Length: 405
Ligand SMILES: Cc1cc2nc3c(=O)[nH]c(=O)nc-3n(C[C@H](O)[C@H](O)[C@H](O)COP(=O)(O)OP(=O)(O)OC[C@H]3O[C@@H](n4cnc5c(N)ncnc54)[C@H](O)[C@@H]3O)c2cc1C
Ligand code: SF4
Ligand code: SF4
Image (cartoon, rainbow, N blue to C red; front, side):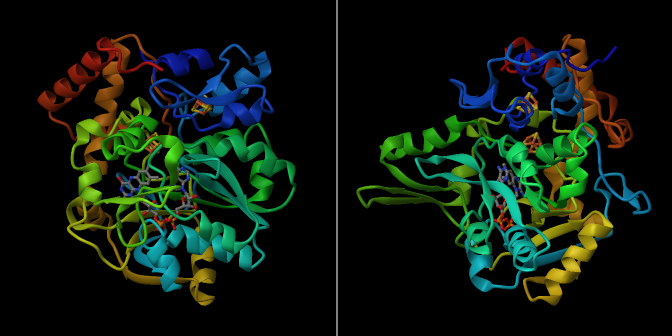
C-alpha cells in the first residue's frame, strides 16, 4: 500500500525534499536551508518544527503532495494538463530576449507585471552577490531588477524561503519559480489565505531537473578555479541556449557550450525528487515557459524561442496585456502532440511515474500524492516489461542509497 511521508525528517531521509525553502518561511527562519555535503539545500535542523508547523509543511511540501491549479472549465490534455493556449513566444525587447535563458518570456512577463503596476514586486531567484555560484531568493521591485536576475539556475534554489517575507509586505506580487515550488505555493494557500489574495501571477519554467551544487563545482574543478575566485557563474543565456560562462575576480573567463555542459547525463547530479517529478510541466502556474527545440535539445544557437503553456484565465489576461504593451511577442500555436515532440523526455518521464512510485512503495519508501495529475492514466501507456524495468530500477536505486537526503 502506498503512503506519503509522516515527518519532514522522513521526506528528507527518503530523498523527496527538493529544498524549496517553504520550511524556512513556515518556521519564520528558525529552520533554515543549509547546503548538505552532496550540495543540496535541506531544512536544518530537522527537529526544529512545532507540531503545527510540521503539519502545515506535510500538507504543502512537494515531497508529499502535488496537484494542478487551474480554472476547471479549461480543457485538459493527458500529458500537458489544462491549458487555454500553447504557442511560441519571446520577449518584445531584443536585449531581454538575448540575455534570458531561452526567449525571455518569464523575465518579460515579470517586468511587465511591475511596470504596469499589476504587481508591486516579483519573488524569484538570482545570484548571491557574496557567493555568485550560489542562488538566493530575490524580491525585485523594479523591472531592471527582474531583468538583472534573468536566466536559468540549474543548481539548488529555495525561492520559497522568501515567501513569508513577500506575504508579510501585504502587497500584490508575482512569483517566478520551478513547477514543484509553485505546487507547494498552491497547497500552502489552504493554510495561509494571503497567498490567493496577494499572488497575482504564478510563472514557471518547464523543468528537466535540478542539479546538486556538485554539478557546478565539477565545472570549476575542471577549469582549475576555486569557488572563492568566481565572480560570475551563468548556466546559460546571452544567446539561446548560450554558453555556460564562468568569470573570476582576477579577470579570467571560461565558456562551455550547452552540449559540453549537459551531454553526459551521468554527470548531471540530479536531485532524487526530480526522478519522480510529479509535475515538471508547471500545472500549478498561470503561465509555463519552456525550451522549444525539435527532439528536445539544441542543435546550435538561435534568437530565442520559448514555447508557452497558458494555463488559466489569469494567465490569458496577463499574456494579452503583455503583448498589447509590446513586452511579449506571441508566435505560432503549438498543439499538444507537437509539444510532445519538443519535450519527448518529459512525456517519457510522465508515463514512467506510476511505475516509479510502485518501485518506491515496494522498497518501503513513501510516495507523493498526485490528485488531478493523471499519473495512473499515463502509466497505463507502459508495456508490462517497461513497467517491470522501471520498478526494478527504482528498487535498485533505493538499495544503492540514492533515495536519501
Ligand atoms: C533546473 C531547470 C531545468 C530545466 N529543464 C528544462 C527542460 O528539461 N526542458 C525545457 O524546455 N526547459 C527547461 N528549463 C527551462 C528553461 O531553462 C528556461 O527557464 C525556460 O525556457 C524559461 O526561459 P525564459 O527565457 O523565459 O527565462 P528567463 O526570462 O531567463 O527567466 C527565468 C526566471 O526564472 C527564475 N529562475 C531561474 N532558475 C530558477 C530556479 N532554479 N528556481 C526558481 N526560479 C528560477 C529566474 O529568477 C528568472 O526570473 C529548465 C530550467 C531550470 C531552472
Ligand atoms: S521540499 Fe520544501 S517544504 Fe518540503 S521539506 Fe524540503 S524545504 Fe521543506
Ligand atoms: S524536475 Fe520537478 S522536482 Fe525537480 S526541480 Fe524540476 S519541478 Fe522540481
